[in-house]
Amino acid sequence: MKNHLLEQFSATFDKKQWFVSLRDAVQGLTDSEARQKLAADQHSIYDLVVHLIFWNDRYLHKLHGQTLPKVMSNEESFRTETDLHFDQLMVRADEVFSRWEVEIEKGLPADQDTDWVSILGNISLHNAYHIGQIVILRKLQHSWKKEFGVS
Image (cartoon, rainbow, N blue to C red):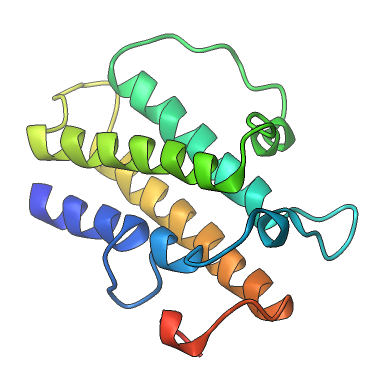
């Protein structure tokens, strides 16, 4: 099971599998391109990466038994780290995703109240969903190149 979870998580983080990983999805992206919005009420690529960091980091803290403040709305999870240059934001994303890989490798806690296998499956699906949005946004802004992975 551990190997399966690691494979799933790596597919969304840094390994080419059936779809583009986060690292591939943002390859060559400038800060300006990352912050570009197609409409004022839509999220940018930058916002989507902030959102992924927020939820992945939050569940890492939960894995370690930390109690976290209640999230008032999902919308706030898109705006927690807006002062970083996109390259710095990706360093932060790499840190969070790398920590997950370490935790999965160590083994998930045997917690009667928390089904970590299911949670990690959902985290991977959530990551893949938003990475797909990033690729679509890049295609719409004409910053996507076929050699990045999907045409």
